[in-house]
Length: 348
Image 1 (cartoon, one colour):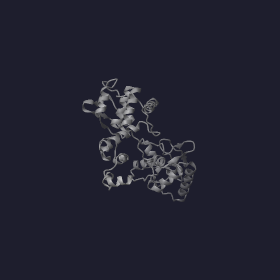
Image 2: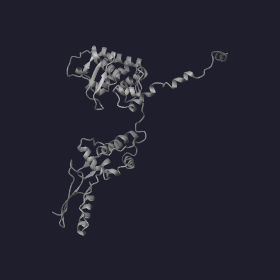
Image 3: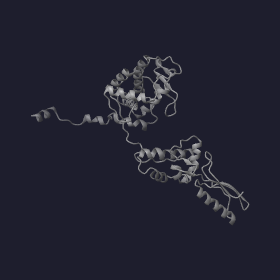
Image 4: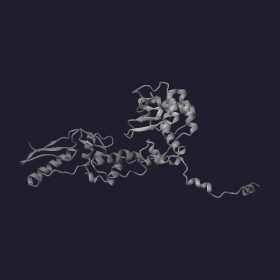
């Protein structure tokens, strides 16, 4: 059979192959191209080299970034932002198109930044980080290249924290009780434990509670690790009065699920309590409130917050540093002040 182009095989290889015999030389190798026209040009190049006796038969050993993407996808990696393959045109899009032809050592910081500029010229830094730098870093690490990928300036976005003062939280609890008794306990639990919404709705089960020991156990969290949960006194009292009881092995503590009605209930409770939150805050305000109260009233610092198990590192917990005036700043109380006599004199 003469040298023939074999099209890419979805799920196996994105490249065109050359297979067949020319002048007694048999080939079955990848062109390393996803575009048919380029693959055909490669075939013609090899034919010429064979005819001139210049063909070495050596196979390119340096994998490309596209090779790494394919391997990453087969291993279960998220290909959402890495690109997709069009079977009709034989062309990849997204990062696979821009960075795919490069060998792994050539996927440098400059190449990554240039790809971000080409694909998302007007996108904000958090979007660029999520859709370029993060997936590229994941592919490189999966390929054994543990190189730091510098993120775009401002990739963390504006780190703002909204929390509830005690009187606001108590008003919210009361409003939640008026909507549904179990919902009131649910809101209190989020506020006093720092649990994420998903952890409280689907992770917290009755058979993993020990009220007598003020303890609960989450077998899985957002971070993929099991976590113990300390239940402070207000939650012990609230759970002990759960309207459906807790003697329900295998069932979740709360019947609430992440849905439109749950958010409608929160909006109604906030309105009844006279609380206005920034857009897109939602239930996360209760997690922020837990961290803020632990800093302000519990005396914890960033490292202590990590020890609670609700955060994985001090950098993540550091966003709550500004909710407490530092000990150093409190030395302003030592600054010179006007005497009472001079102050009375000025009043005259």
